[in-house]
Image (cartoon, rainbow, N blue to C red; front, side):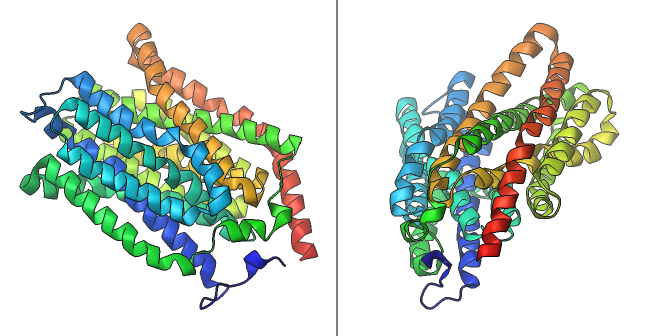
Length: 413
């Protein structure tokens, strides 16, 4: 066996993947917290007498922060192939945390926008590199469960953001809240540097296993392109549903507090779906999970129009599972088509495709809603989501070939 299977000195072979999973999950909690903390603070930022922002300016802040994180995912992937993911993950999260501190110090809108853009760029390290290092650490067994766990961890940061904003903003305001979260993140990332020797990752692991570091074949390249298309549609469905479901709820006569509770159900179901579907993928296969989750999603998007308000709680919980559960399956499937040594770059391309889908979809469905009504926009969303089912069938043969290759490799070892 290659060198990457050997334990790091002072750590058992078994503990190395576990430590990698813990590290990647912890950084994902912080990364998603960094990007989610600004959302509940936007009303306070808008009302700041030094800024007095319009709704368009507020929207631009959110779009720039989230959109900037996609800009450098592919370049960071190429860098990781040479130097490993660990230091880039640490550095990227330090970059974003410092950006929050810079946002807190901004005295004009242009300074705030510039700090938001600069800080957001560092977020391009988290998703592709954390998924890459975990998929490689668990390449032989339990890959989908591990990837699903990392995916789930990010939702913990998202769920923590509103509570932390509520607690901190009451005392410190929006600037103090960003400053506290940023400094706390800087401290955590600095301490995480001490864990380097315990983490199974990096250049050494890739270079030590030439058979897993090679290029992609034509069949795998086509499969990866098809998978990225499925991920594009999946991310679009998720982003658009989160954008327009609150309007559907308001149309049923639900007040703001009720809508907030329903969104908590949606996010909680999504977090559970990410973890559970990763675990199920290791046992029942990717296509089964894709069809199950996206079939449920397409159905419930349509049902949400006719469902009474009292039925929205179980509906949003189930819909959250369907909307988010697919992502863990797709993230793990990327590793089936990308050699271990190229995964950082492969995940960079994949996550960029999903970010584009998540950015375009709300604009597209918003236009459909303006022209034909919100109900027809939701039905269109359901129909497009259902298209994922036949599209995913293009992955059947490549997945079967990948499974045979892994089984053959295991027999040889």
